[in-house]
Length: 184
Image 1: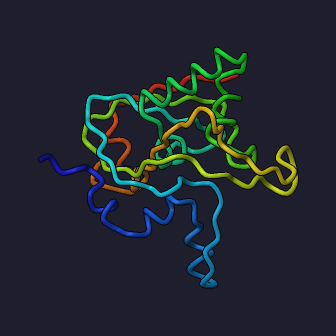
Image 2 (image 1 turned 135 degrees about the vertical axis):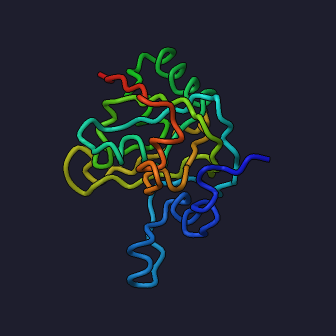
Image 3 (image 1 turned 180 degrees about the horizontal axis):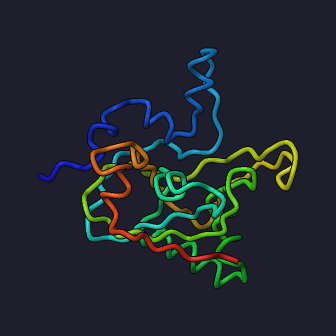
């Protein structure tokens, strides 16, 4: 069996805690588990090479956040979001925000990243959990709850922004250049 390119990161237990939506930095400072968003009961999975993976991102974020962020969808789950948008008259951007519980304070959701995986990875998968929006701004304290009637399995991929011999891991595991499309 081929070793996953992020096997070292996947073996570290804090990544599962992050996948579950807990803020490990605040947790480690005061001993309290603080969290919002994430996935319910993250389960390990393998991401085979030769497949496309999708991520909704912010154009204002640096490349390490846009391409090295941990939250992705496989093709089948991306199709669920795209189909929901088409069937209900939503833009792809709005459908992603609703179905994946993406508060405005977290992301503009103005770009779609499509990446072809060249090397296998390990990830956590599961259904999204509610996310708490910011107290001010566009969210005004909104609690974002993923759609219940169309369940989308999300992926959390540990270590994509981590440095390796060729720069951040995402530069070596995804075929370059990664495809980026603007969302309206």
